[in-house]
Structure formats: structure tokens, C-alpha cells
Image (cartoon, rainbow, N blue to C red; front, side, top):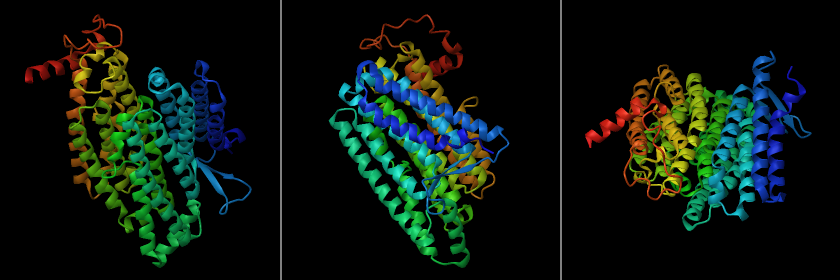
Length: 490
């Protein structure tokens, strides 16, 4: 049996974050107490998630359990469901959120006016709570409620930075997100009308009966198409991703890290839960939605990288790279196999860890270059902020799928999962082409920050660089060879 403390962790985690969102506006801004409280609460929830994962995998108890909420049992009440996957995602989301806040602690003070920092902390807590709720919920209407909370908080976290460009990007994000939310709401209403349930396992049983009796297949297909399209818009799946680069390019470094690394993943995991727990893989295949998702995933992998190649702004380049990485996840989902779903979940975890690091590193390098975001302005910034340069290099190599880095494991999993699918040729070709395209924009970015120029540091706000580690840092044999080849070729 699961012990009582661990049994209450899913609800307690969401509740703690919601309470923190209420308390932070009441704290004085002195010594940045609201931000410190947010970090402490998120850190505590991360520890609780780690303990829950330990209990679920080492106690000999059932690997998952349902936590009923309120006084009404299922199927009338709503409930949370916790298993190893949910606890891992909760742990990863909290860790990535905490590191995004800590890594951008100083830049947040510069980018956000003092009067808005408390609001920023409220939004961070609400975003984290909504992510955990989407991860744990076993009820579609509860999922919709937290999708709306997530949408409002995500749009506001973009707008928290003052400026006309930021406001336009936030409004565009809001409009697109509301379109997606509306489609999701219509789909949930249709599904409730067809099944009479909102809990996922009850809805799944009712859908299986409808499919066996061949009743209401058209409304069922429409509801699946609507909920998939709505969540695809919110997940920035191509061709619904045009709002993403604007939102990331104009927001604060912390906001970009949170939006790309975490917010998108909550919606993607909701799609996976709906496919796997509500409809079932057989029904998804019967209604041909796996083919649609697979094709859109292929397009996202290629077109996201093509758009990234055209960018000179480093944050917009990384944002379009996120579109490509979202394509990898949907490709795994579109394979419509257990191995494909598992590979997609692994890539969610990898991307949730790597993408915030990339945005944080890009922000640090941009600050070192005098708050310039153009790629050429970052020339030589590795020697000014070596930790940020290291973060960009490690993140780039991971997104390219270089062996030894996290991205290699998830891409290998997607490759192996493709062998069990009839679309193996298309899948392998897209994986290879996208990896090459990833290298075409990430390798030049790494070369630029490693390349010294006599005028590169004129406008830097950071202390003057020292070159004592220039030839030894990271034992840069491979990196210096790439730089040398690059210069000889040009």
C-alpha cells in the first residue's frame, strides 16, 4: 500500500503552489522576498515529487493510484492519477522551473520593473501549478480549467516585460491560445454528450462500446479532431506555431525558458493522455488521427529547422528550434505504438531540461554583448561568460543528437521505435534530415561565440575577458578544429 504521506503528494503539490500564488503579492519587494518564496515552494514540490517517485518504484505497492477530490466519488467527482511517469514529469518540470528562475535571477531584476516582480512570481506559481495539474489530472474538465489558467498565466508572463513589441507578441499569443482553448472546450462537450463521463477511464470504456457498436463514429471523429487541433495550437505544432518566435523573442530570458521548456510540454502531455487513456491506440488508428499527427510532426521537424536557419536573432532561432523539437515528440505519438509514446515522453523530458538551459545561456551571452541578440554580436562572448557559452554548446550538441548528450538518447529511442512502424522510411528520413538541419544552425552559433574578434568586446557590459583558458577550457580540441575549418572555408 502507498503510505498516507505519499498518497497526498499530488494534491498537496498543486495546493502549495496555489497558496504560494496567493501569498507572494502580500510580501514586500525588499530583498526580493516574493521570488525567494516562489523558489523555495517550487524546490519543496520538487523534493516531494522525487519522494513520490521513490515510493512508487521501490515500495512494492501498485505503480499508480487515483486520488479522489471533493466529497463525490468517481464517476461524478474528479480525481488525480499518479504513477511513475507523472511523478518523473512533475520532478522534471519543477527542477527546470527552479533552475530557470535561479539562472535568470539577475536578468529578471533588469528586465522586469520592481512594481511587476510580485505579479511575475504569482504567474510563475500559477504556471507550475497548472503544469502539475495537467500532469496528474484524470478528469477532462479539470484539465480544461487548468489549460485556461496556464493560458492566462503564460500570456501574462510574456507581457510582464514592458514594451510595445512585447505587448503585441502577448496579444497574438493570447488570441491563438484562446482559439485552441475554444476548440478543446467544444470537443470536451461533445465527448461528454457522447459518453456521459468526464473521468478518463470511464470515458475510455464508453468510447470502446461506441466503436464496437459503430455508433456515433462521425461525432467521435469530430471531437477527436477538435481536441487534437486545439492542443496542437497550444503546443506550437507546425503550422500553428507562428506565434511562438514572437513571444519568445520579445519576452524576458526567464519567460522564454519557461514557455518553451515547460508550458508547451503540459499541453503535449495532455494530448498523449487523451490518445492513450481516453481513446486508446486502436481507436486513434481507426479514426486515422495517428496519420495526421505523424505528417504534422514530420512537417514541424523540417520546417521548424528551415525557419531557424533564416534567423539572425539568437532567441528566435532557438524558438524555431523548439518547433522542430515539438515535431519530434509528435512524430513519436504519430507512430501510435507503445515504443513511440515512450520515446515521445523521453523527448519531452529531454527538451524540458535542455531548452531552458539554451534560452538562459543565450540570455547570458546577449547580456555580455551589451544586450544585443544578433548572432554576429555574440562573437567571442564565450570568453566573457564561459558558463553561458558552455550551456549553449552543451544544449546545441544535445539538440543535434550528438552521442554522449541527452538528445542522442531520445532521438535513438525515436529511431528504434520507428522500426516497429509501417512508416519507417519516412520516419528515419525525417530524423536524419532534421538532425542535419539542426547542425546547420547550431554549429555556426557555437563557432560564433568561440571566435575572437578584435572589436568583439567593445560594447560589453561584463568585465573585460581574460584569455588564460582560451586554449585549455573544455580541452577544446574538437571545437577549435571546427572553428579553424570554418575560417579556412570562408
